[in-house]
Image (cartoon, rainbow, N blue to C red; front, side, top):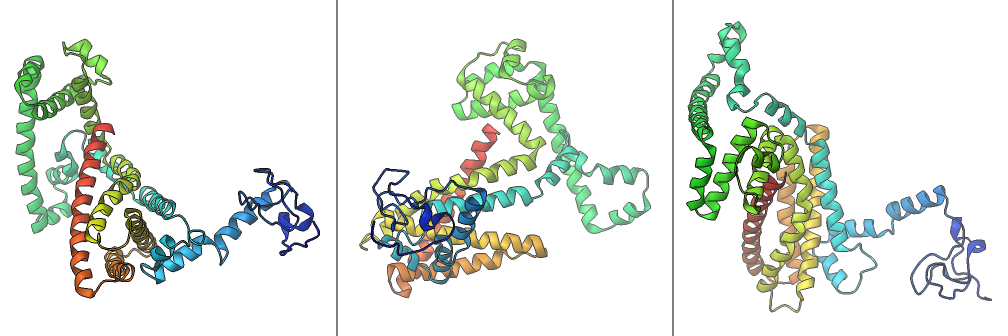
Length: 380
């Protein structure tokens, strides 16, 4: 107890609030101990006030020495170096790569969700209650009533080509309506005929049949369907019914569906990156790096991409520009630099592996997004 504290801090860390036992783990402390050497909790017996709470929060976030600022500085200015230092043992200096990436992904997709104007897509869908021809009903009706302004517009080639498209769509709609009408004449006969098809064909055909029955009879659950029609209550039929409901809802509220899709993308990223890292590990198998080292490298680079996308999105929202292409170009240059600095190979080898890995990533991302959209359609 005779030793004087090395740091005479202010606030709740002042000398008068120091204790002789950690309040978290019970480890014996000296008055000079600012933090517990066993569990790292601050040595303070003072009750936490709102002022203390917010002082600590902002000091940790804004402080020049904070992990966040050090991570951002190293990530932006020294491609590949932060990964080398992190796997080399400097883990307290920087934020956890996994947690950092997850936070950035959630921030980005939340921005997209809140500022994406998806409600406008729903408004457009409201004008098309089951028939996509109604989307252009303003043009058709105004033409019938000989609106001079719109008649002049229709003389434009683009408007005329639009009407040609409407004629084509009208024919498709007629055929679709005729097919639906034939199915509705005897839906059970159509349903039983599906039993001979393969599972994939049968499932999607059932989904389409259930969609027609849901729209015709305004069904809300599978129980109502089985009450009106002798359809067996099994897993396949229940899943097909749920998929049909989801597709109808997605068609009526496409904006909400896209918003829901964006909310799931951050978690898709964390299924994709570990798989992609296997290919990085195989390409650099002669390097003295573990799979986890490559995974940390992937997390850091993906974090930088989300930082650039967030900056780009904010700039575009404020100034009405389209800067995403520029920031993606910056990321491609950054990724090449990061690979050169981290793996230490020559330009030719790095370029070949860079092109190969990016091709693999695009393929995996396409498959992942397609699977996400398909899964969302069944669960929306």
